[in-house]
View 1 (cartoon, rainbow, N blue to C red):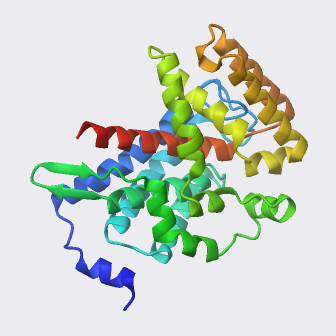
View 2 (cartoon, rainbow, N blue to C red):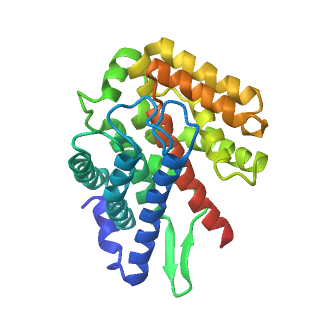
Length: 298
């Protein structure tokens, strides 16, 4: 019997309070996707304002995809609470991906989010306690939980031979989402969260500002496999320089930040660049921020 099997067998059957917990975690993942979609200006990416560099998707399609995925994030939270190993999480993720592709007519809207947010949902449920007083979230970093619990299995796991990420890995050596997860999502904790909270402090009255600040910070620093696939090294360097210039000029703390961010967005669209990996990390950043805020209130 493996350690995972022992852990799963030692868990009691989930009761009504546990079900509410799983719904809460899955709901936060869903809302993080919607917050990412609502963020604008967001270089090259789909929003409610426009479709960015994409001709195959729009905001309505992404909203539909997020709604379809919500119950799978709930299921992944349940699996995490039961101590599931990577094989079980992967099976849930593959079912979620198949449902996503069915709902979108074959368009890959959220494959990266299924992987990253799914792991974080499982990690969140592993680190809570439920009692008569309600749910208590552990202050432990969810990225560390993912790395310690599933990192080795993710590293050794199967690679999709025909995915954009695997193509970029072969050509450029960029590790992408798998490397992020194995390392405990350092881009969330070192880049996304600090930038999100800085943006919130710089523009506290503007709900759109903080996600934009975090998005630009991620684009400036993350070696995004989607950018590499679409624009190669030249496009990736252009994207990072453009994002860094926006941040160096004051980011969302500058009076004209929307105009400058929109100009960067237009430049990405003109070159067909889309930092999809950074978009996934932005959604994950907002998910982690929401749960950490909940833990801080307890």
